[in-house]
Length: 571
Image: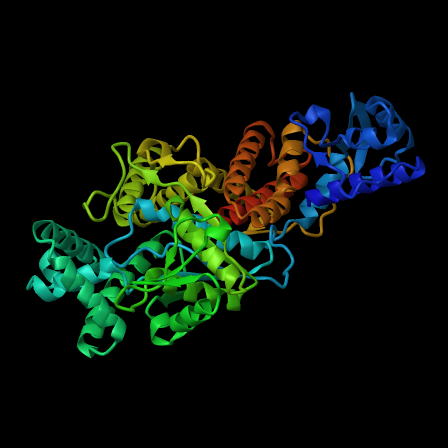
């Protein structure tokens, strides 16, 4: 929607340059001034042209302003120093924005690109903890945003069923004479986590157990022991079942769970190894390795163990090859500690003539008292995190809304609690480290709760109108009054609502979601200022303002949905 203004500004600049016989750059830079008093858009085209024209930028600015035609959507175009500033006619633009907001607002046209997006992929050796969910929330929010930006997105969870961690769980099941039920009545992923912790303690006491674990990996990879295969498979399914439940509570879903062992069973790992052997980059001594010095990586990528069995690295290559064959873009969400491994994979894919993955690396979440470890049993599980968030939200609701029924209270508290977690993580760029603070994440005066509250406020205001029923505003045929005298708060709100499609496009192109989270906060703040300052029901411009409130509600709801956050109608 805001692109309409940008395109009109660009066309007017190009026409003026043609009148003056000035060169037209391939890209004319437009920016949004820090203060609306300086306009809605500004350009420093004069600086871009100064060198080629050998003129003072101030002179070029004056020439352009004298020859520019003001498009109908603008009230004026003014020079501010070397800047050329465009001022929108909001009486006209308000009509365009409000007419353009529908239930699909923010959804862009489909394109022909498919993205295979892998995220979360935690080892099946215990429950998800808050160290994992930054991956999940970035990945799921990107899935939603990229889909809105027009991409065909397929999300995958890579299940590490051949790793050491799972083999340790299986060793425990086979050697500790216990059943998972012996660890309590919790979800099975929590029980597996307790067993994994106990096996780690046994390993400290007796390092010889490591050989038995390694032997289990070899036997499982061979696939010859059906009973052992079943033990591995059952353990994975029990753990992943619990993980899926935890992810569902966070509104996170995957299209497919891809098991690592698949690539050994179907032979694709060995095809990768054979193809790499045909290149000049492999070395074979006790192990087979890939020399990547030519690519600036000193550490070799080990492809097989000394006993000839595959490694995670080779199975990961086979997995990336499959993803590359299924989509135009392969997108991985990974912790920053995987940078070397992914550099190795990317160059191996280049050697094989396949597309390398795009990777979003994120820094870790820690607790105020330090880092987390499943092996040491020091972590807050996602289930505990959600329970605590919902509990705190419920306590706050009891203070604010003692009129709610128990069912209403539980539902709204859950929506607020999960929303707080997702927004707290989404709001920061992935490159920034997060120390998880309860009071900050669940603060009701700012952050996600204030955004959800803005949506609920909009619904409550609409419900007071005779024109609103069953979530629908029956003013579609009403033509907005040309004399609508917009207040500053209305102008600010219209300006921000109009930017949602552009923010979606930008987020999709950047593969980032923190700018969308910031947009949401800006939108909620603008609506709350409007709500407090501008009368609606019974005012001279009641119908116009009801339409604006309705547009705000849709923009808030759709933006929250892009971050996987519910939009409560009551708070």
